[in-house]
Every structure is written in C-alpha cells, then in structure tokens.
Image (tube, rainbow, N blue to C red; front, side, top):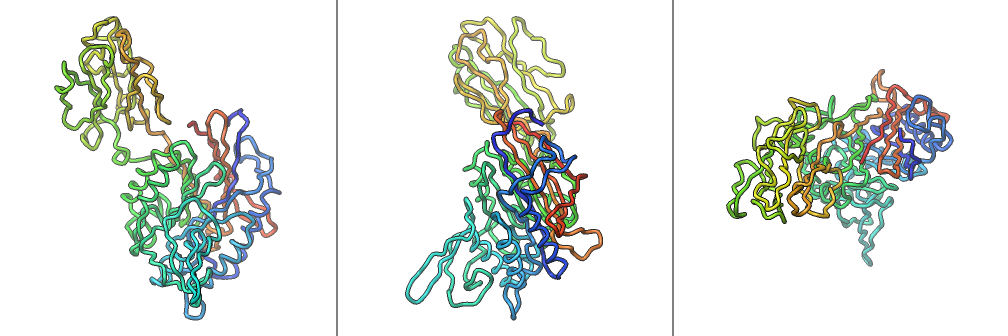
Length: 501
C-alpha cells in the first residue's frame, strides 16, 4: 500500500438481505446494529491488509443496505399493512447512529402491486418526502434522510388514509413513472443505489438508466463512485429476466454506462452466503474497442476520404506545417467483428524511412510529416494487438492541439506529430480499459435464512482512503456480528487494493 499519508478516509458498512421473519432473524439484525454502532471501539484485524491493522476502525459515515430489507413486500396484509417495514425502521433506521441508505430487492417487490407500491412509496418518503393534503392546507413533508439526487418526484398523499410506515395512501404515488434510483455524496465518495438491478423495468418500473447516465455525468470522471444494488454479476443472480435474476445483456448495458467513470466497487446481496471478492471483466462487445488505425491524406481538406467503417478525428496532423492534410482514422469492433483489439499505440520520429519500430509493433505506412515545407524528420504511427501482447485494449483515441492536456485517464504519446516540421504542437493520446474494471463484493446476509450453510448477521466494513498523488485505496473486510457488539472477522475474504487515477 502507499507510503503517502492519506488526505482523507471514509469508513462505511454494507449489509443486505435483512428479511426478518422470526426471532433468530431479529436477533441477528440487532447484533449487526450493535456491531456497527460499536465500530469506533474495534480495530482492524491482523491480516486484513493495508497500513492500519491494529488501529481503530472509527465511526462509520453511513450504512448502505443493498436489497431485501423485508421478506414479503413489507409484510403487507389486511391486519397490518407494513409489519416488516416497522421492524426494519425500528431496528435499523432508529437503532443505527449513522445515516441509513436502503435499496430494494426481489423480496421487497415480489408481492402484488399494492405491496410494491408500498415499498417504492417508502423509499420516496425516506429520501424525497411527500405532499400532504388536508381540507385546509397543502404541506410538503421533507425527506427523513437527505440524498444528493433521486429519480422520483413528490406525490400527493392523503393525510387521513392508513398506510405503511411513513403514513398516507400507499396507492397514491404512480411508482411506475420512476426508477427510485438515488445517489448521495458521503465525504468524497459518490454512492449510487440501483435497487434490484441497474436498468430494472420489471413490473412496469422505469429503468432509470437515463437518470444514472445524467447523475454520473454531473459527477464527472474524477470522483470515486460506489454502486449498490441487490443482484450480483454472476452465480445465482445471473439468468433469465425473472423475479430472482437478470440477464447478461442487462449487465452489459449497465456496465457500458458506468465504465467511463471512476467506479471503484459494486456491493450487492441476493446470494446469502458471503462470496470472495471478484472482478468483472468487460466483454469486448460492451467496450467496443478499437481494432484498426490508419492515416488518410489529401492535398485539399475537402478531398479527404475516410475508409468505410472508420471514424476521423478532426485535427490535421500537419496543422501549421503547410504540408498535406493528414488525419488519423480509427475503426471499432462493432464495424469489424473479426478485428483484433489494439493494445498499444505509439508514435516516433526517424531520419530514415521505413523507421525501426518497437518490438511487436506494426507500422501505419504513412509519414505524418509528408509534404511539409520543413522536413527534418519522418514521423510515424505504429500499433500492436492482443495476439502479440496481453495488454488491455484501447477504447478511445484523441488528439491534443497545442496546449491541450490529456483528459482524465488518457495516456499521452510522447512524440510531437509535427516534430521536425515546425508546425503546431500535436500529440496523440489514448484510453485503455483497466485490467480490472470493477471490484465486486457480497458480504452475506443479515437474516439467518432457512439454510444450515448461511451464517446470518453478516456485514462488510469498508474504508476508502485518498492520497495527495490522486491514488485511492479500498479496503473491505467481511464479518459476522456477535451479540456483545464485537465482530468475528472472516479474514479469508479480506481485500485491500490501491488504485491509480
């Protein structure tokens, strides 16, 4: 881990699958609350990784609940419209000393429409608030817990109707209009809750991917992002579009949206037993990597012909050098499904042609200084592919004109494309797919569940540290809460990793 002193640390907890149906589940839930409230008195265990083993964990900034907060859509029944929601609120919302950000899973939503309406309404009341109507006034009730953004609007609720925890008419909101996805900034972390799964449209719910794309665009590519949802990306969660699974196509769509951003982890539930950390590698069809690069030239700009299936970057590589018009064009896998992803892009200069290339690279047969009035150097571009190296594929190329700086996450090619031609300063830069794109965690369930192999009382304690260099460290330790406020840590699942910007 880094020898730098961190500029900030954020500790938070993730739990899932509360589903209280009996006294054992209730006791397991209460143990989890005790342990989280007692974290400032506990220390990071030896073997957990990082530089703070044996040091105090500290108070958590938040608790994130990734689905199945109830067993049967809140416990909706004729006698009591929200008994399980009452349990969740009493034990967790009122019992924990830090903010609680809840998401819904398949058990919260599998009941009839009235049950689903109750659960979505509960999320909206917690994080958005509602409008209350009386005979004599109209009043807006603030959310109980504030978030940065939520994909839901205020809805009118009847103050006289009986309903779920939070009060009002549980059938008043048109929950089908919203995804109820929300985000919250906790210190320097942007946490996004996607409920059952990102893009979920089951039961007529709005998918929320447009909201997600806009939310992440507002955040930008520098801020650290953590995703929470109920379904994981493999195992029991993956399958047909059913109550208990989502499809590979849905996963690919979600990943394609979050990939450009600084997503450092995804926490989920659903699989009740704790699962070791796993990394999600993006399929080539999702990242649509670059499989071809070429240079095109003409005496006049209007005569430039772009090869079929290629895209042209609209910066003349001979700009200011008064030579031929030369443009870089690239082709993606979607335009050439038989293409091999490019894993390296270089440029160089030489006094002879053809130049001597780096080992394993292929020349793009075009002098980038062709026709310039001053021609002291030949400038070349070369590429390499996955069949020659095992590097990550290129997913974008841009050209820097004069004082431009590379976008976040891009690598600048060292050679000036006008070297020896006395033109404008032109550099190539490219973005590659990180070897490990997203780290994924499932700490196990809070409820004891009806299985001898499921432990119950599980939680994950995570710490994100930021450093002056821009690096980020992520540490995640799983554990089982004991009834005295301590935690039996599961060190075999400990995770610690430092990430560069």
